Image 1 (cartoon, rainbow, N blue to C red):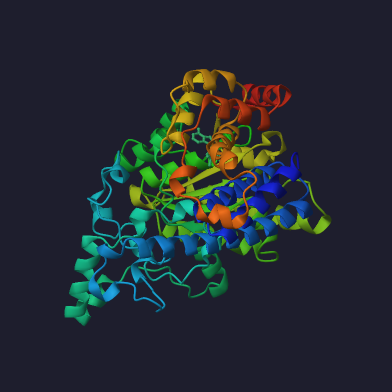
Image 2 (image 1 turned 90 degrees about the vertical axis):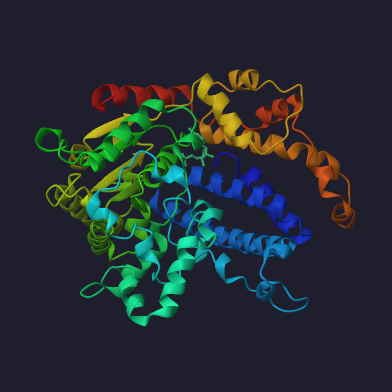
Length: 494
Ligand code: ADP
């Protein structure tokens, strides 16, 4: 890893802030470390090493969830006035706020978040059925550590009017209750543990990433909209030669927004989102991997329209790893090919609600097996951000912070030429912590505890950016870029 010392330092700082009770700052460090680990993971080819880092990520993300849990509980105490009498925290008593359980998902309502309906006119057949996330209310309780922070958006935690109405009607009529039950994937004939593992680790209910959260990448956004939304809106048109793509491959350097794009597709198109990393397919469920692939597609069809996002697709069917790993990977690939042949966009005649789209991402396109490449018919390049995209990425990252008057984001963006989106995010994160670091330098923990929070929230200055830029270096070399461009010239489609 390029900067293990920095990672260890960030882990240490995050833990120290958590111990000091400064949860907001601790969480920033935790998120940063998780991203650093994620970035590192995407560059590891050795399967053994990769699975060790995955283990670390899992343990660390459990820790992150714990800190986040404490922080959420504390903020719920602060908003005491907004709770009904029965839910107000009682001094000294254990306080539980049921609707804040991150694993309890209220059904979305069209009025709840109009952006989520953008672009998709629901088909009549679909209107009669609950939305994908509706159908999941009976899902087994998931281990929170296995879902990314984006899966727990605040809007998803609030009980909606519709949820309340449903609750009332259930109380009034047990018969009605049965009719209202959301369809749930029937585990008969399947390995129940495996179904639960999928529900827990792989289905992400509310990725909650919108097109506007992603800077630049206009071409890619347009193409994905065309590939996923239009066939849902006009199934009649997307037939025969115009049939939707079986699979789309996003190619590009690490940290350029491929995962974000996949999440935006799922959010904006309201499809059920299956988020799979191919190394977890080959290692986590060792021995059951091809069963898992089969089940994944079965469930995707059941909860259709669905998007199956397969990250690090290059490691499927590759010749890397030990003999055993290679064998598992080969079987996973064979099953994946069979399943992909069975999807092909809209399956099941004209019923757009049956659409299953495979979206794959890779930082190593040259390692992708030929047969898989053929099924990933559309191959799009996700490049490093240009100056305009860098500026909007800075704005997205800094929208909640105060900037000093001497900050010119256009200039900052120009200086960050060659940085990936993830690098830029790291620069912003680091710059946003500078004033706090200065303020607490040489203070003892007790003195830090006494500090007024307002003193820590100082505007970010131009000098902070310069200092952070010197600390955070580019993660993608010019040589790497040439390799991507060459591959795209040969195999790409835009
Ligand atoms: P990839 O899948 O290409 O490796 P990700 O989508 O996981 O990259 O991006 C990693 C992080 O970098 C994101 O969580 C986000 O903070 C930041 N990022 C990268 N590209 C963009 C972008 N185009 N717009 C906004 N944020 C981005």
